[in-house]
Image 1 (cartoon, rainbow, N blue to C red):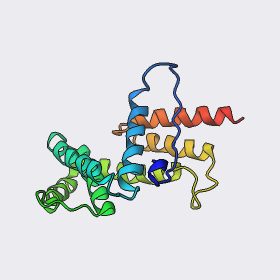
Image 2: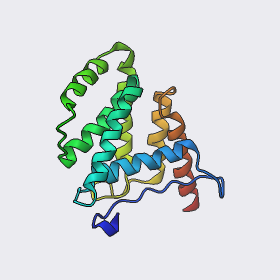
Image 3: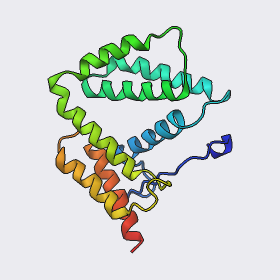
Image 4: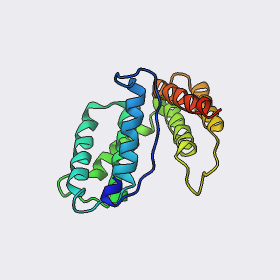
Length: 177
């Protein structure tokens, strides 16, 4: 992405396993990073616009197969990309989808999961790669933030992914001792 004129932050995930596939949670973290830093934060230009639009269309298509909190999460990602990149779709009414999501997010069954998501987003900003805003956040405080999330919401949707992140940060922390 740097070669496209879009410098980006790096996000290092460490896992044991040698020459094997990374655990599912680690791969999910990698794909979330791509969505956040490529589709949301990168400025779309002529060469990346078709790919970004294609990805958003696929995400909209995937909404039909999602339920509950996963549907809300996916719609939030779509909404972020569309707003940030100022995408225009003539054949898709995002406002109709938004109404359905709003109704879904008011359901009592999802209340605790939505609280979890807000806390999760807060922890994600602490774990972001160094920036002028969070230049000196230590690895140990990042590990504690992730650990407190899994303690507060033990049956959360991202439990395996968070456990992988804690392991990755712990490995990085131990290598710097």
